[in-house]
Amino acid sequence: TCVLKKRQPSSVMAYQATEHNVDLEDLTTHEVCALHLSTLVNVASKEHDSTGTGMLISYEDDLLKEDALIETILPYLGLQKEIDANPSMVRARVEDVLSTKTNLRGIHSQDVDSQWRNQESVHVSREVRAASQLFMQSMM
Image (cartoon, rainbow, N blue to C red):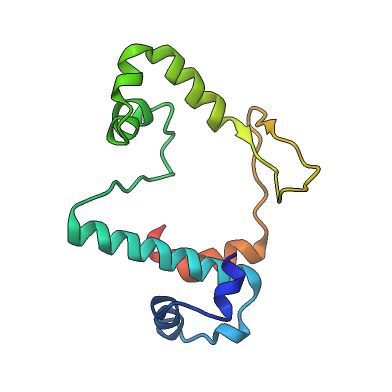
C-alpha cells in the first residue's frame, strides 16, 4: 500500500521528499516505502511529543528478554487483568505470536505461517538498506 502513496502523497510526505531534494516520480518502490515509513514515524513522534499520549517502542530491544511487553506494553494496552490472572499463559502466548513468521500475502495466498528458526536472519537487499538509510537515517 505504500507504493500507492507515490501517486497521492500526504502533505507531510511531499514535504519530506522536498526536504530530501527528491522527486517522488523518480523514486523506486523501496524508496517510496522507506519515505512513507519515515513520514509515519515522524508524525507519530511529533504527536507523542505534543500530546504526551501513546507509547513509542524501540524495536532494537529484545522485547521478550527485557520483559518490556509483559511489564510495560501490555499493561499500557489494558491487559493487566489477563497478566495478573495467568502470567505464564500470557508470556507463552506472546512468545508464540512473536516467534511466528507470517508469509501471507493476500486472502488467496498459498503461503502458510511458520516458526522462526533459531538464529534465522532476514536478508536485507542493498536497495532496501540504501532506501532506509536515505530516509530514516535520523531515526536509526
